[in-house]
Image (cartoon, rainbow, N blue to C red; front, side, top):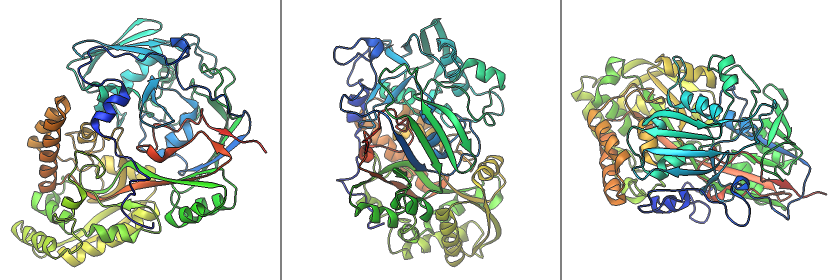
Length: 558
């Protein structure tokens, strides 16, 4: 990539206040509802059809490699949602025009009780699943019961978002009520309901498959596109849903989703050769070439992902906070970003998104041990900690589980060298496919393990639970810190922005001293598309998971 710091003209940092406005829940509003804009009725509210749009055509979309399984709820990778999302809808959604504003979807309006403990959704009538079945509140209840309270053996990364959901009550076939045990900030809850991950599936589908959809390739949705065919590891083909409830959408007749390795030369060359209309997760070299091409638009935006490696706290050396802190300090992060600069666009960051207003400002972070360009002082402190922990002579034979991808393989070799040089820690690299990596990590079959994990929201209350929370679904280290967990609960409940920001910084300090994982970098996304593609402008998006339905995209004919 040309530079490692995101340009303010190409990326967007959304303040909490702006987020509240976008969610329609600013200030002390006790009752919030999604009201239709313009002359249309409430039942028609949603993404509006563009009168200038042309109908027809096929969009060829290149994105992440093929999914290891098909259960979107259980997934944490764009390999699932990038391909499958066009077939499904959610209760609420992010407006694809800005990627931020929350608008109606299968729920055309909602109310929040004055005490913030009841969310009532009014559901659209006449919506059909692709198999012809009627959509009702029972499907919403079955979907969210599974997300909020997964059955044994089912792990859903978004479960912590709904930790306070006590009951889900069907009031009638088209009204459903979520009853919380205690209130949460409205923007947080509405953002959770609007997550692209929380697709609505049929109650019958879940019952027929014992609540596990990992091996069910094309379970029926209500979305703008429906399944046609899939060739494993190559392409997933969908066609326009002719009975889609949002009249006038989608515009495209056909969607072809090509499975390609992210940041790969194959993806870049396919786009540059004109074999794809839209490419996501381009490598920096191909992206720069695409940016110079006539008739092509390129965009960069921040991604809702941390690149990190975990330390198994069931293993004696890594259970010692001094050892974990020493490993954290031994990382030369500017060099790690440099290592992959022509493979993937990355930026240095700590335990909170570096582009979030609550995080330590970049200039301040770069003065902190572990983030400085000159690593001498950090390494000296790391060696001192190892000596105090009784590992002054180092540690031998650690199993380093590496997720199959160019970035992780490059980083693993660099990290292996840093650990050896700085701390005399010796590791054995073990590269595995993505599905095996998550299985091994969840089972604790590793000493160190490098990958990337996502959050649903940029709000720390989301990933403080999912990534760092006690028994959090992505807390692969098995880390606990009661001081942090107590503070994280307070952050969840706090509505005052300034107080909350102060508490997030306090939480950051705890994480620096007692790392649950080792942050390596934060990803950016490089997209490019030919100008015949209209209706998609991701430059202000946060991540690639909420706005991947393609219902608003159209192709200029000829």
